Image (cartoon, rainbow, N blue to C red; front, side):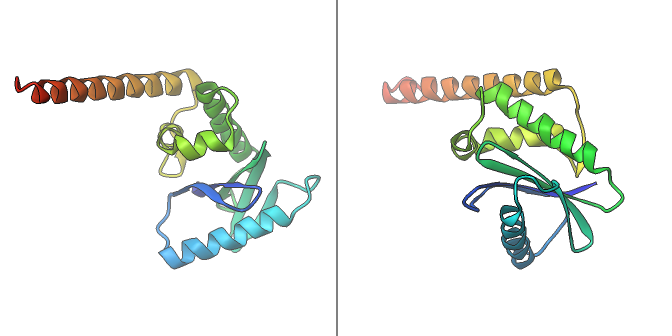
Length: 161
């Protein structure tokens, strides 16, 4: 089971974090600091797995972002790598060749996609098509809500509401 997921840049800035187990804020900061420095210190030819405390860390670099997941020691690292890759494929499909700026400026979409893929540290939906369908439905609902708010504010300005 996945304990937490971190996305961070080559400069060490955390861009997205999702915790599936409860940790104190102080511990989260310590974990982030230590993991980011440990992963960034590794050479590109080195293995994408490392041990951190009683957990295994599985990470993969895509462009300028590192996708890092902490799992229990008995979990299969290759499946976790596949889950990371599936998440990157979803981001790519939605944003069209995802980059760090997409995650920064559309973090709510990145979190929503992660929540559609993984719930409680376990994979919920493996079908990219179903996840993209859910994201599209959410986008349409958001646009509908925004247009309703715009119409309502226009009516209020005209004194008709």
